[in-house]
Image (cartoon, rainbow over all chains, first blue to last red; front, top):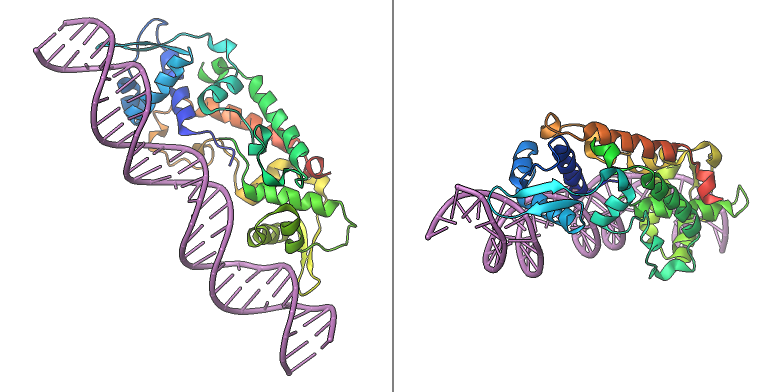
Length: 132
Length: 132
DNA sequence: AATATATACGACATTATTAATCGTATATAG
DNA sequence: CTATATACGATTAATAATGTCGTATATATT
């Protein structure tokens, strides 16, 4: 439990890889996939998603690839995680609450407190700190 | 991602339920399962595990059940989570590292930093805070 | 002593989630 | 024109979480 997904992991690897290059240099999904042993198609999808989220810029065609578009020190880890994986809740009922037992549940409030702490922690860390 | 398991959730519900009673009063798995709509056998296993971990005391036979044994304000959430679910790592390589790519991986150190923050956060919260 | 009801627990089955692949379309440099 | 890159929905495979089954043991009650 409390694990990040490979998607997030791959995204971080890719960002860090690109950050070690010139800002306008392009990196292909293939290059990263080969270098770190990541399934290329899966990585490509994640990069495409980051492009849709304006974290990366994508350039098509041969000699195309991706480059970092956003200011990584302006994106919190919380926002990054939620862009890629959706709302960050340790229990499903943190956001959507169609749990039948919600009336009987005695730990909803305490768990939400923990969850707020966790979200707050990730809100205070930036992508830059992880990928620099 | 970053979710707690039902096992932990059920354990917290059970602890909080027992804490609302007299300290030496017994509570059966059945009682809790019925009241909160939890599968009884699954809950029972979790209670048994907590008994093995000396968080609860178990009393067998009819009119048996469980009662809280440990001082909940002396058990951190980190220890509690790790008792129930094992080591707390956002990535598998935090503890065991048979990842083939470990040499190539460029984010191991940064992720460990995040993970340390998370573990530290849970180390500073006690079970008591959640179940009181 | 017999019975009913509780915990104890390994093995198995089911379900949900995550991870990976497939197939096809589009863009563009050479 | 061709090779190589991104784009992306659909599907399958793998893994992990969740739940069930069967059986054993303890013990209060009758």
